[in-house]
Length: 432
Image (cartoon, rainbow, N blue to C red; front, side, top):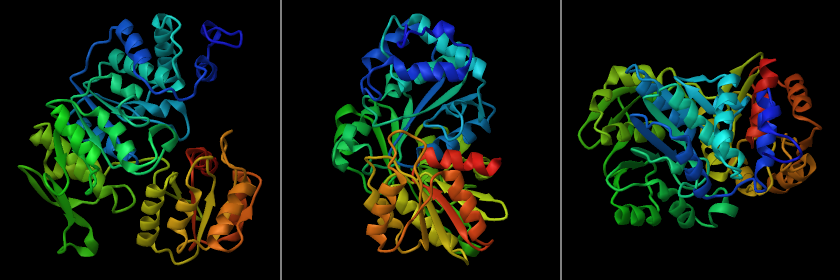
């Protein structure tokens, strides 16, 4: 089993296992369902009452959290699988909003390894199967699975869904999914199923999703046609919003406890899915307000207040950078906006920087803690070329955060962005 002369039986810690998983497949990303389906059959897991897929370019994590909160409010045991993690691997696999333990993950890894018959599973595939094992052991009523990349050939799609959401489609992971919106949308449409309810969250829908939906016979629910939302004009400071669906209407809804009005698009799609699944009993104003008021998400427009104000957001594609720009405009800090950025190779640096250009006063480049990251010098050169002013280079993220903490005041806003491999370490530094 495995490579590099080691066997999984040698591993007593989760770190050992995770290191070994990285060596198991010669390809880091190997889209396809055959390997996962084969091992899934051998695991012989029981099916939970409800399986929901969440796909899309941005907003998947928020949508998973909202669905989880709604189902938990009814007393259900809810399992969620998301990726990547911000701080620790355990964050990917949660039961009722609590990460499972190292021991539970190791036990699941052992079970997957015992039946895989030398299938060269990728890191993500192995982790997906382990999550399904844990949900089976924990007897989850509902499991919510975030699609890692695309949809059609993503490991999550080996599990038959009862319903799902595609939040939106924009350019990302183009090396694997295609160079334009329609080709990427065609991959994401692969989660749709005949007769099953699926929601598309954004207003403009790619033709590829419409075409595939008609061909496969999915019950596609569209914003602007089957549901919509709006801020209530009579509420103070636009603090309330309303949602309307095919059969139901909810008014005087409180804003979700996640930064940014863009979260209303995610919330509206979630409510539309609940309605499409004929779970109208969950479409209750008090229940929705309570569930959405308790939401927390690490590293996604996350405000952290020390003696300085920090905003941590994984804006690693142009669409996410545009959302971050809107959030910064909404926040309108009294002081300067300082951005600490680290980015992986292959990302649209020019597009991401362009989205933030008119708002940022100071740029600082660091290297993300990942082998695929741009060097700080490469990143700084790209930023400087775009904004026509210097970009500070610092050796490490901790150095950058300590430096800028010493050079700012309480009215400034310090933004850490660009990659999970920057935001995660930044959050750990702040907590320490």
